Image (cartoon, rainbow, N blue to C red; front, side):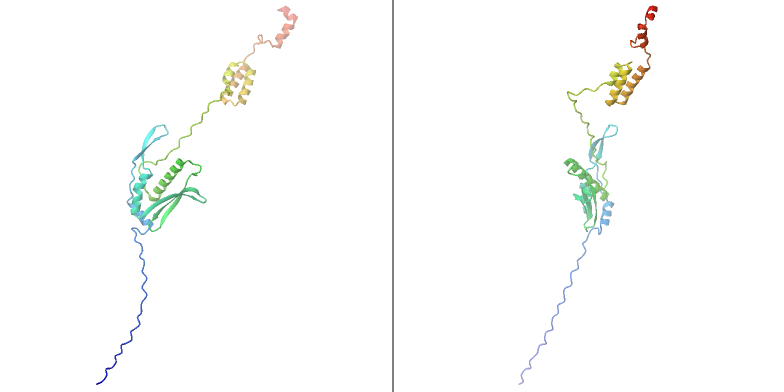
Length: 252
């Protein structure tokens, strides 16, 4: 009997593990691939912003007119959701930019990160009142949103005109010297050329208006041109000589 031959198993082959292939990142899927494409799609179906508010303004002739308009909240309610459906969003913030000062920085951005931006200078909030600052911010945000998107609200622009400052009226002081009525004084001195000349000088020094000075000068000219009654003038030298001449008295 022969012994069984030992069976030799073949040596196992070395296992080679291949490096896993890197996962390829797929590009994000946007409704519109670029900012321009998204904005074009938005403007192709531009939303309508109705004018549901009213304001009363006074025209140049003083007539009050009631005009329709859409405010910032009306534009936001319609335009922002429509922008979002196309992958766009609008943002704005008050800030300070070196060289430009205080203002509103705004931008219209696509979900890919591409977009457009701008800056509107605003009055200094340290010198303006809180109401003025708020109104300027609202107006700047409204203008920026309308300009970037092409949205055209119905009605008129809600421009707020500042009322003209009323002149300050101060009551005259109790001990204040009343203003001189040079016209009345000139009429009272009619015919007195010397008095009118002195009055004209006083009126001119007091800053009287030109028509008053002209009226005094006219009365002075008329007084200078008037004939002098020598018989009634006690200061006439000829009358004094005749009164001192005995021969003249004898003849009379």
